[in-house]
Image 1 (tube, rainbow, N blue to C red):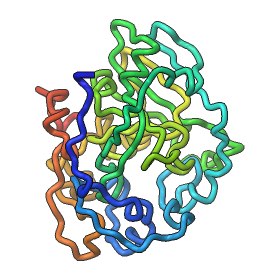
Image 2 (image 1 turned 180 degrees about the horizontal axis):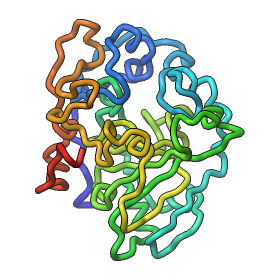
Image 3 (image 1 turned 135 degrees about the vertical axis):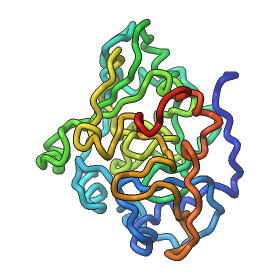
Amino acid sequence: MANRWKNNLLNSEITPEVIWLNRRQIISSALSLGFCGTIAGPVSAEVLTPNSWEDITSYNNYYEFGTGKGDPAANAHNLNTEGWSIVVDGMVDNPGRYSLVELLTGLTLEERVYRFRCVEAWSMVVPWNGYELKDILDIVGVKPGAKFVSFETALRPDEMPGVKYNVLDWPYREGLRLDEAMHPLTLMATEIYGKPIPNQNGAPIRLVVPWKYGFKSIKSIVRITLTDTEPQTSWNMSNSREYGFYSNVNPTVNHPRWSQASERRIGGGLFAKRKPTLMFNGYEDEVAHLYDGMDLAKFY
């Protein structure tokens, strides 16, 4: 327990639930930042008028259910999450298909909330509840020589209408270096604000890597593979010029189509002053050592 991450944010720094959920109203009044734009540090609490439940869960990126922001909310109810299982294979001691109960048995949530800065195209702080990925990998046993962890999202054409379009090479794939995966900040999330993750947000279990851009935090995971070679990742395969394997939040490296040096925080309105983007999304002290000696403009 000594190496576990300790939350150092104050309650006043958490984005209120009504703000986090009321994304359609916020985004409609903000300048578009493009896919996975800049990222926030902690924000001050500011309450907005809450929308209906349908409104507050209606703005998502989850292309398996459609490329429109409202498509996941409209279509994700078709995803059946009962009896969910994850195949764990590759360089592990105990490969196999595990139910969520089998993977999570014996792991304790510890009555604490992980307050992570949301890595999406807007700035806020979201409490994700879940388990350190390291704890799950320890259960299956990582073989010597493993260097990377790859992940796959469910691919269910009958339940996911978006996969009939060749937007990406399905299934959706992501990956981490093993030391990134074993870092105590890397979370397998099962809840938001203590509530089960909605289907459109990645139910029943998703990755959360708070110092990286949002597309790294893969949703609805059905496979985890340990390997000694860098795995292919969906957005890097689609457009390697714009989306590197590492995808760390780095204000000194611009996206080819926009600057990532500053961000506008939720609640400030369209004309709110932009603020500098924090290196590694504010987690520089915790994760910078992972990249000692690396050229982060090359390994972006």
